[in-house]
Amino acid sequence: MLTLTFALLVLIVTGYILKSIVKPKKFPPGPGWFPFLGSSNVVQNMSKMYGSQWKGLSMLAKEYSTQVLGLKLGRDLVIVVYGEKNIRQVFTEAEFEGRPDNFFLRLRCLGKRAGITFTDGPVWREHRQFTVKHLRNVGFGKTLMEKEIQNEMCNVLRYIEKNNDKPIHPKNLLATAVMNVLWKYVAGETIKEDRLKTMIDLFHARSKAFSMAGSWLMQMPWCRFFFPDLSGYSLINKLNQEISAIIEEAINKHKCNGVDGEDFIYSFLQEMYKNKHTYTEEQLKTICLDLLIAGSQTTSNVLEFALLTALRNQSIQEKIFDEITNVIGDQTPCWTDNSRLIYTSAFLLEVQRYYTIVPIAGPRRVLEDTVVDGYMIPKETTVLISLGDLHFDPELWENPKEFKPERFIDEMGILKNVNHLLPFGLGRRRCPGDSLAKSFIFIMFVGILQKYKIVCSNGVLPSDDPIIGLISGPKPFTIDFVLRS
Ligand code: HEM
Image (cartoon, rainbow, N blue to C red; front, side, top):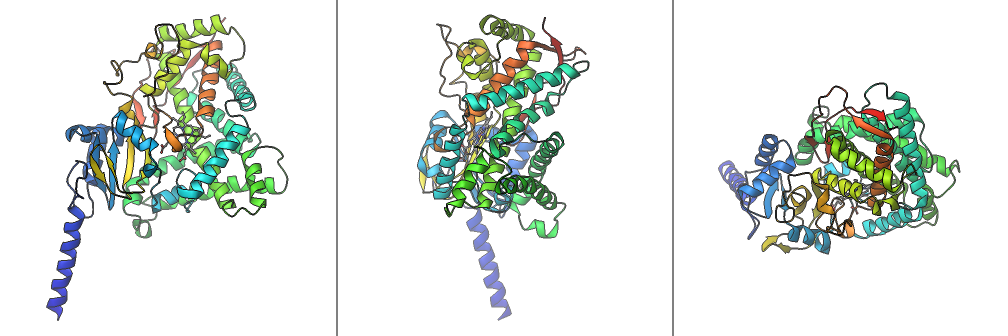
């Protein structure tokens, strides 16, 4: 009897192992799969070797000469898509509109499948529509929000004026300015300085904790029971609770009528009071978190890269300064100036290509069995979209490794509409904060360069090698601001 049970057990385990290493029919090419791990170890080694997951995956795709890389990470089927045609297909076709659902992503959303970024189906559609409509109503990219951005620009200039006797770290200064604008939109008020600092530190610590805990908690979520500290779970939980408490406090203040107005929390609560069943406090809290996470570091990192590039290329900086002086003089910059400041706008587009802030967009979840580039992609497969490679594709960009703003200006001297530049994605899951991000980056950058020449006094140019995690950012650097006469 014992022998029979043992034989049966061996048979079941062998069957499971064999099943776990056999690829589905016509699945895209990629490394072989090991039992339990799939190709995780290969991806991890490549990421380590090439400095980031994006570069590691890109090298693997080249090794297998494919535009669709097929992987298995733990138990999940994953594909990474390359090339304009495949990327457009994933961005625009409805079968790719889903988001994966797992313990790790729920942890990102404070423990539940809620919010917009990591939901799909009717809840996502309804709340995305509500959020986008609200973003338009308060005037993202229009006058109301523009005033807020211009106010923040004045705060940044005031800070520089007070502190420019020594080099300034732009990171915190810009992060503070973006967070202020986002918080104003979400909660309708300016955050107190110490509170703001706590929030920025919290978001920073949280994104670091997620990067470090990523591979452990994503593939072996059970390890949190055995190693809550070592796996990073305890820290993430603590940071989640602290961020949750800050957002809850703002919601409670609104509920006690402490904040009037048209901000997001106020509008959402009005819907909640109508007893619409998906409008819950949990959902409100997670959407606020979505907007703060998705909007803060992305926007400030682009601006940081723009300043770093101007610092490293003085001739480009002078060209931008001349254009600003000739076209708008000392007027306060506004978003509509972007069609007149052609070279400056082209420079900012090139920054978004050259330092693609979200090198791998997604993750998406395939809702139906489908086909990409002739390969069969089973339902539930996770899809990653390599925007970083799209922006360096030699078939689309001449000398892609060269930083060249002129590629965005046509022979008539007009800004070109280049439709393979996709830093904000495309389709129904396209970034809903793009107008805010673009206005913020443009107004802040023009406002700073209009008033100050940016240099490095010690003569050692800071490196422009990015630190590439889930999003890309520059290594810490300082700027000396010299007032223009
Ligand atoms: C330069 C700054 C930014 C960049 C490069 C960026 C990039 C992106 C990209 C590529 C996506 C699409 C992901 C996908 O297709 O799966 C996305 C989604 C998203 N972004 Fe942004 N973003 C930026 C700023 C912002 C801002 C300022 C906000 C908020 C006000 C925001 C909120 C969101 C949200 C909520 C989503 C999820 C949309 C959904 O799943 O339906 N982003 N972003």
